[in-house]
Length: 430
Ligand code: GDP
Ligand code: IMO
Ligand code: MG
Image (cartoon, rainbow, N blue to C red; front, side, top):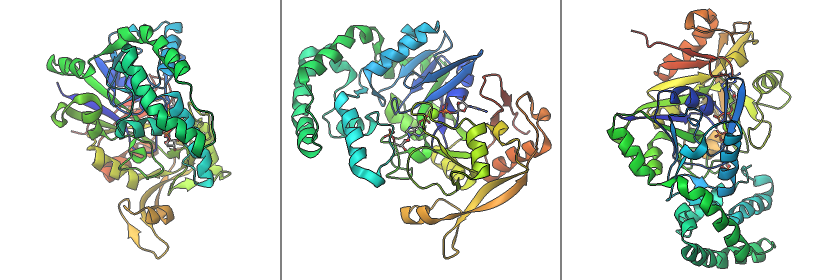
């Protein structure tokens, strides 16, 4: 049975965690294929709140095997903390499987992430400072250490000494920082090996065994289309590829193993960190403030206030294309309930009045475009108790229908609150 991909269609924090958890109920494997603990996925189940960084959002169901694929970058300390957190909430974390080929985030990656951001000054990217970029850079430069290296102290030390020659030179001479002590680092990391060893597996094989056995495999993006290293708003992106096609590299499957691609879209738009954002409402704007406050738009991990604005359907259409979305799952429709009218960006215009119906490829254009809006009526009352499409006000249904018509893709799920059961399933029109 082919796999299902869940991917963000905006700049992250769309609610991937909520809908991955929702869909994982029917799955046997839930696989992360890129990113690391820069992700913060929230699940609200039976009144309990889970904030996951590395462990896939299917972990709450005892029959689901959560898999951290080869494309992920793993901070072993964070992983162990997260496993402990799950155990403390009564979730058996021994089912988690980690690819031996996944790369390790090392303390010098985090240090480099911090100092390079500081050196960029006003040009900083606004990273999560988790060492993600430097870890992927080392993977590409072929000097990364991998999870499997933890179980061979000799190889671990050889690779570490080699890479530290360069890293310590850069830290000390370029950034005026203290060098990393190889002995202490090796002791700390190798000390974690006994705890991690039982979890490490050939995850590519696991995924294919499940697919061959006609089991349902969910692939969960850590991030989103416009944070993609190739397709996002470079350089204001993350250092990996969340787009659906990247499941192939990050989990070891082929394009024909993927069938259902669920694009997660927030009913408005948010972004954390720097970079262009055509529909952004400036901080202090009354409508933007409603989105932030009602939507609780503060970072799951970093607690940063998220920038907010109306739904950008031009971006969404682009994301549908790039990911070949077969459906969309719309989250946080409830957050828009009090607006009298709603706006959706349907095109862009530059200062010379040139209209763009698609996302311009050139960064200078993207930075300067203004949104062209279509205005839709609001519904003016709360919808968080709606359980079916019929229980949604007509204006809310029209909002959903507008998105479907504009993108040409069916909206299959609508979120009307953070809880698992605040989900409306929309049947496909006959
Ligand atoms: P992710 O990174 O894409 O998994 O999203 P986050 O978990 O960082 O941010 C989404 C936030 O919105 C979380 O606090 C969720 O609990 C919450 N959320 C998800 N879906 C809905 C929804 O339909 N309505 C409301 N009000 N909140 C939601
Ligand atoms: P979830 O999983 C929102 C952003 C950072 C920064 C840029 C690069 O919660 O959707 P990085 O630390 O990855 O090098 O930072 O990417 N970013 C996210 N923004 N949600 C995320 O994950 C993000 N992960 C990274 O804010 O702008
Ligand atoms: Mg998040």
